[in-house]
Length: 415
Image 1: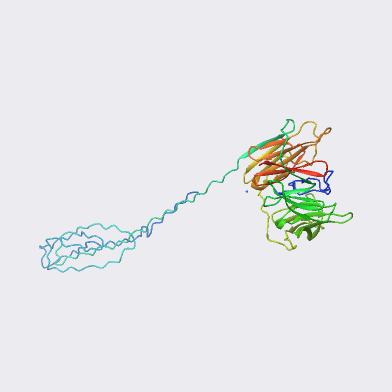
Image 2 (image 1 turned 90 degrees about the vertical axis):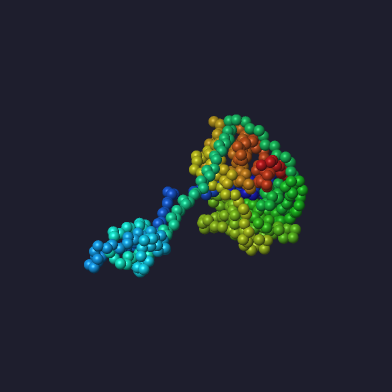
């Protein structure tokens, strides 16, 4: 979709309206290409080991054959972690205490105090406290949260030729010799006429630069790329079509590169990196942008992203970063039906995702009624009143009007 070619027509003949000194045509849009379960993991370190090393207050009970009537002291284990149990107050301090070694516990253990029956042993033994390994911390994985995908709002717009509409009346900017009018990527107006290329201040209409170039009545301008290089088609009588790149050099525009091509279902059009073409074999091809010397450049044009949604031929349904619009065209009973009509064929997407749709009602009898719809916000439709869309720069839309005397009026309205 070419942002710079308001004169796009589905007619690939490249013929300009009467009064133009050369043919004006350009690309259009008819050939445009058409989207936890919460998992919670709980990890328990060294869980429930089968063997629990519990050593506590073991009293070895033996029968003493020398004195069965006497009983040794009763020892109760009141051990705590890492601390040996103290002897009870009535224990014989002269009796030796022999600790029993135990392997460290591999898992968390619960040690309960044990009370032994009385025994006649002369030397009760107190076990050391069990070393308790701390349980591994419980790790909880927080479920990922996915931001909801915003669904673009759909704005329905109707272009009804059965109803009247206000006439478009742009504010005057300048009057210039007939030619191709476009807007550069940085918002300047340019006019590629039959014998010169002129740049204008987009606000005041004052001329800022003028370049001469060789006249050619078969010249068809597609648009302007980086470094102010113009891309045009030339086809002298009985000669093949040739895409030629013209660049400013001194006070002239001169040829810096060319390639042969053929016409197809879609006019050549400027894209982000160059010009989409069909080569002489009939296969799709691409001509990269060049600089003022004719050398391929890495510079690009920042074109807005647009996608087209499935719809009937009388509906133009498209989506940009600004939202989704569904424009339905309603013709009167006297409309001359064209089976090749497609509602989006003259849709232009400019900077800031401003869209302008031009639709014509060809009558079986009478004059053609052309409507221009500004597809932004709620959308508004005008009778063209003879004006044609030329492009936009910032917050302004530019239009041209053929005055019928070899001149064009340039006007603007707020986007």
